[in-house]
Image (cartoon, rainbow, N blue to C red; front, side, top):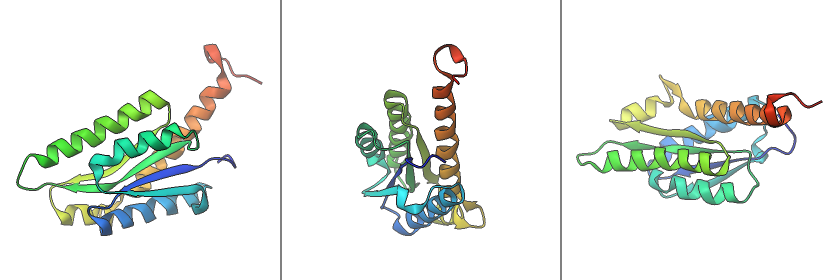
Length: 156
C-alpha cells in the first residue's frame, strides 16, 4: 500500500461492544495489508444513521483514500430498523459516488444481538475484516485507474 494512504473509520457506537470488535478486526486486517493502525483515523458517531453525514464530512477533507463505516443495527419491534439500514446504505453509496472516496459498508444489519456478535468476531468471523478488504481493493483499483489515464491506456 502507498505510504501516504490514510483511511477513516466512522464507527457507530450504539452497540458499542459489537462496534469495537468490528473496528479491531478492520484495523488488524488493514495492518496485514500494509496499512499500520496509525494511518487509520477513527471517529465515533452515535449510530448508523449518522454514518453518511460523517463519511461525507471526512471525504470532503481530501485526507482519506477510503472510509469504512462500522457498527450494527439490530431489528426491534418497529420499522425503525428498516429506515436506519436504508438511510445508512443509500447515504454511504451516495457519498462514494458524489465524492469519489470509496465508503465500505461494514454495518451489520441483524435480527438479533447474537447474530451481530457472531459476525463481529464470533463463529461467523469478523465482518470488520471484510470492510477493510473492500477499502484496500477500492484504493488499489482507483490507483490503477488513475495510472491508466484518459481512454484507459496505461501511462508510463
